Length: 180
Ligand SMILES: [Zn+2]
Image 1 (spheres, rainbow, N blue to C red):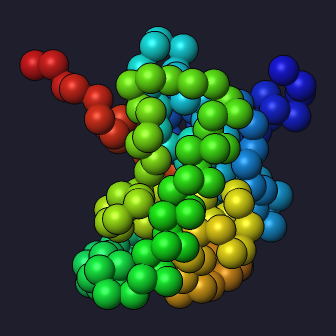
Image 2: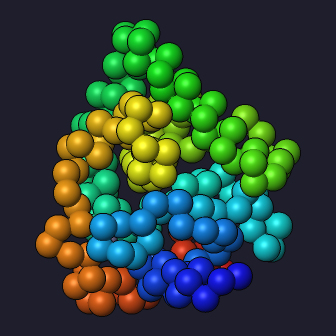
């Protein structure tokens, strides 16, 4: 592992407020210079299958996605997938691209055919779609691209103030079972 990767891991851990698990590389770097999307192993070191290969870490982008998720956007997008066959086809293509990218990192049978964010026929997590859109570039994930366009230039003025003031909050790990 290179020194740069170690530094990036430390930044991602600070962004998430917890240890960056399964991080292989930076899939997309924010214009602020920090990692914005972590390329994540399909199986974590403790054996857990991990479907979100392109994990959005930039705190500004994460917050912007959460704001969009609080609107009706995901419901509207899912409805459009029922009506717009061109969109549905492009979104299914994004699902296939996601699986192909993950397959290059290794096959994990438990999540075979499972991508992220609700693909291929629903929209369940904009963080996952935006993470994919950033990592893959424009034209791969149509609804990720749309969400990104709505979010705009999330790295301005700078992600750093949010990282230092809000990134170190302690909070529960997503999905972690709290034992009494
Ligand atoms: Zn940033």
